[in-house]
Length: 79
Image (tube, rainbow, N blue to C red):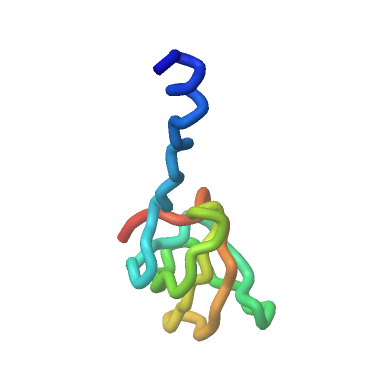
């Protein structure tokens, strides 16, 4: 088999999200919920959906504000 054939058959690496569904995360900066309430940095939430192979996450918060927010990956860290 030629190197060109091997190269064409090689699979592209699949991106893996940094966080997975149902992981607990912490905000590193303030964000707004889908309802417009501000969730302060340091708040903990649970990931309920992963978008774009981990580019963004739907996070559910219960303290100090109750609500969901779509949060970009760089605004989260593991709890």
